[in-house]
Structures are given as C-alpha cells and as structure tokens.
Image (cartoon, rainbow, N blue to C red):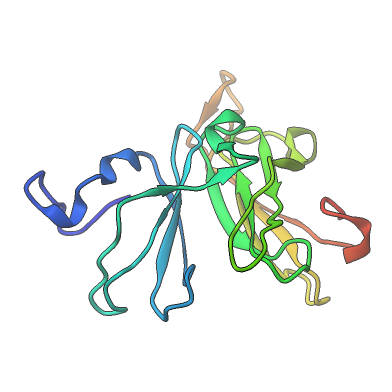
Length: 188
C-alpha cells in the first residue's frame, strides 16, 4: 500500500499500517455507513479490514482488524493474498474470493444477524486451471453478460521463454465464466 505523500513514523494517521507490506487492496463500504473501507491482503497471506471512520473526502482509517476464516488466520492457508469481496454463492451475504500464488479460493460467509462468519478457504481454481503464472488476483463480475458472477483472474508474472523461471514478462487476464449458479461454488 502506498500513501502519497509518503508518511513518516511521526504521522499518527498511519500508525500500525506497516503490517500491510506487499498489499493488495479492495475498496468497498464494508459497514454500510456511506464511506469507503479497505479490505487488504498482504504478502504473508493475512487479510485485514481497515474501517473508514472519517468521511468520503477526509478518510481516517482504524487500526487493522484481521479477517479470520474457519476461526483462523488466512495465513494458515494462503500466501500473497489478493482479496475480492462479492456474494459468490448468491445467498445475499458477502463472501471473500482470494487469489494467491497457488490459485483462487472462496471463503463462504455463513454469518447471521449482520455478523460475518467466513468458512475456511475452498479452492475455486488451481494452477491446473489457471496455467502458468504467479500471484493470481481475482475479480468477480458478470464478464459475459449472462447475469451470473464470473471470475476474471489476473496474473502478475508469466514464465520466461528463455532460461526458465518467472519474470516480469507481463501477465494475463483470464475469464472463467460461471455456467449455472446451481452448479456450485466452482462451476464454470
């Protein structure tokens, strides 16, 4: 996460944010108060919520709150987390769809009474479906206009043609259309 102008250690507005190294943010109004909050994945697999207690024009973010899944840190399962928040299963609750270096994962929200309760990650797509690449970042949207949520997945790196390994040779954006909602969480 980059703040401009870059804060120094004496700026209290940014206290506690060093935990968000190599971050991947998602912006939404998490708490329904009319301003934008942040859900941020970081390199070690943890995902954090930063609530905006300021205004839309003058944001003031709270300390980080770690989002748990299956009662545990997402770090238990993931590495280099890139979160997206969407209702993946159509039950009216926000779910987490998270990409990492091994694939794309779904944390179903089974919460009640306005409280989130995310399940342990379930694989939606692995490297076998995604192909060569690294640091998969999902987007949930209706990519083909059929009214169902689809997965668009970006990759940060692709394999080098010469010399093997991974490098900054570009990346890809892949579309995985959902066929029917009743086909289940990973249906394409």
